Amino acid sequence: MSIVLYEVHQRIAYITLNRPEKRNALNDQMASALTEKFLQAEADNDVKVIVLKANGDVFCAGADLEYLQSLQNNSYDENLKDSKKLMNLFRTIYCLKKVVIAQVNGHAIAGGCGLVSVCDFAFSVDTANFGYSEVKIGFVPAIVMDFLVKKIGEARAKEMLITGTFIKAKEAMKWNLINESIEEGNLEEIVTQFAQKLCVNNSGNSMELIKKLFSESDGKTFEERLINAANVNALARSTEDCKKGISSFLNKQKLEW
Picture 1: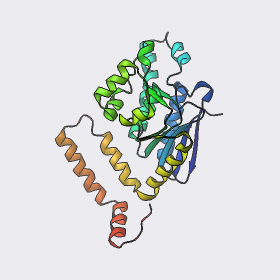
Picture 2: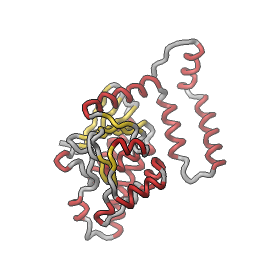
Picture 3: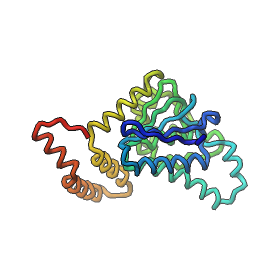
Picture 4: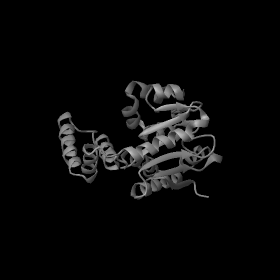
């Protein structure tokens, strides 16, 4: 069976980590398969919103340590090539044109917490732990750092990355790492309802442009960000979605996207 599953229901693509016997640990095959499925969902015209979820009791335990051990005799160039697979996965999720929601059914550790950090929204069971344990084994959570700082701020990111301390879902919510901490039996229903609201109430084109503004803000000056915003504003006015939305509002017609 595939280590990553893909299915679509009511315009929601469900991408599922499927290595429960390994606590959905990440290796090069998993990173490549996830990247492939996210790009598939982005190109799928039947998909408007994506949910990342996992089979088993753990969302993702991070890197597969047996796999990491097998890489220790690699050259620097070989390790760099491998590292770029995870980099590409995180960047793909963060910059994807479509909204990505993490449905966290259990602990999200190290690279698993990284997956949560790069999603647009995250909902978790209240029993889940979040944290970056790399420092405990002499490793470095380097690839996720920029994404994490953007999400929770430098001070909190330093606390997570340097101390290796785990936090519970309710604390993760206070730190803005996740959006909501939920009782275990209600997670799937709440995520589905949230995803369906985005599908029905919001323009897909508008959500895409908003994500584009966020992902393209890095490295730009304040003035450059304003100019880019003005360009996107002008572009949005001419889209069919905007014309349809304004017409429906003025004519007091109920609009479903």
